[in-house]
Structures are given as C-alpha cells and as structure tokens.
Amino acid sequence: MAPFEPQAVSESPNHDLLTAKEAAGYLRVPLSSLYYLVQRGQIPAIQIGGRWRIKKSSLDGHVLGAKTRKTVSCENDVKDLKQDTC
Image (cartoon, rainbow, N blue to C red):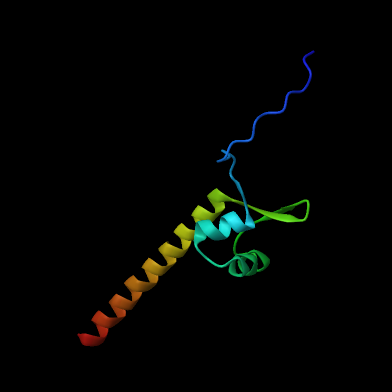
C-alpha cells in the first residue's frame, strides 16, 4: 500500500464551497450583509470548524430567485399601470 500523498492545493479550487468572504465578494455585498442573510436563513450555509461555508450553487440559485421575483413584481406593476390608465 502506498503512503498517503497530499494533493497540491490550486489557486482556484474546483469545489463548490466558498468562505463567507468569498461568497460576499461573489455577490458583491458587504460581509456583514452576507452574515445577516445567513443568520436569517435566506442563504443556506454550514459551519465547518466554526467557519461558515456557502455553496456557490446555492448563491446562484439565490440570485436567480431574486431576479425572478423582481421581474414578476415589475410585470405586475406594469399591469397595474395599464389598468389604471384604461
């Protein structure tokens, strides 16, 4: 059996977990805002060794979900405006 050989750590890991700082940078929000969203459960996260880790795919879903909700809201606003003017 061959002894354990550690793998080299690359600059850009190909795993899906981000640190809180990386996630805040990805979303372009302050770190405090990211922690607030995590604490409220709006962004799913896990703690590993006392540090928060967030799946990049869940951030993508969070952003896409927000865009979808905003688009639907805007469409409803336009419908309301059209009804008011008729």
